[in-house]
Image (tube, rainbow, N blue to C red):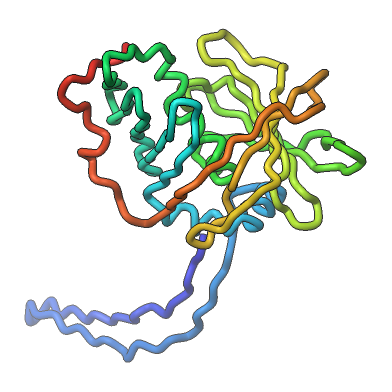
Length: 266
């Protein structure tokens, strides 16, 4: 948050009740001082991580995120309006979306969509947009025990949500980062969608392959790990991201509207 201290206009107004007239004198505007004061609404630890990835102010200036993943059945393109979180997912076998009110899917070539759209909507975007996605309103931060992997120790920040925030407010995340650089290295996350209460079962993704897009340091690929006793063990699979764009341009609402022939997902 930047606050600029500027001089005030000194206005002296003299009222004459007798003559029922008013006279205003404006003293010359003079710049007393101008100074940038940077404050943060975030704890120091998570601010360090945001700054290592380009800064939360730069992220907040963006409106559109798009990326492509190569899936077994072809390319999957996800486009998200970062402010409204409306989303469109385009694949060879279906197109799905969320327009702010309705979840919808358009099946192609007679192939039935068998996924859980309400769960999948925003899922990969959320993982991709780390660490900035945890700068949202309604989030609480807490420093927790570090993670040690292959002899290196990473400080941890637990991210939890106020009740009613998002689809699964019981979800929790732990960002583990490099203490020297501040760069994010690991994500621990729980899955509570469709369940009651919080979970203590953390899954793990490694963030160790980065690229810079429009001044922001974002993943080039992510490694999902097997885990045991809430600790990552061996790499399970890698998901790569190509054709990444992050822009200030606001996407047209029509991109997320349910097309003809699509069906609502309840």
